[in-house]
Image 1 (spheres, rainbow, N blue to C red):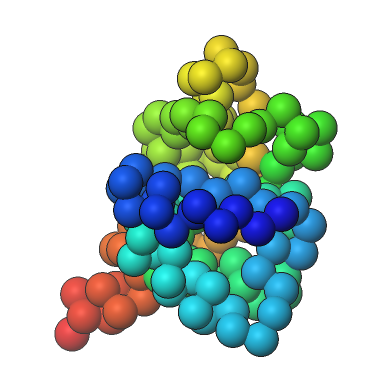
Image 2 (cartoon, rainbow, N blue to C red; image 1 turned 180 degrees about the vertical axis):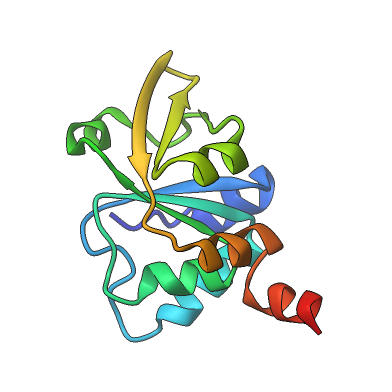
Amino acid sequence: MVDPSYPRRAREAGAHAIIGGRNYGQGSSREHAALAPRYLGLRVVIARGFARIHWQNLVNFGILPLTLDHEVEYDRLDVGDILQLRDLHQQIRRDRQVEVRNATKSRTFTASHALSERQIEVLFAGGLIRWVRARL
């Protein structure tokens, strides 16, 4: 589902998450599909699944890609739900699984990442450009 109000709401919200379906990021402009939302404040994408390369593009722009552990949670989320990811750095370093709290509905669910140690470093640096710049 495409949300035509996303750009406006994203600018108003600041840091935010997107919930995506299967094969999230499919298409010919994958870098722009990560770059543009990042500059609108996107920090996390929680999806049923990612297009082959897109999740890496998200990491390169400092966006955390997470895959729902239980797809039933997708149908329990609504536009405007407030999601909380606490102690995120510790969770990512400790385990592949991240706990997500839907504060709007007082529910907790899990999502997982498939990041390497290097990708975690890139993500925590705010993206590949910042990571490389810090190493120079």
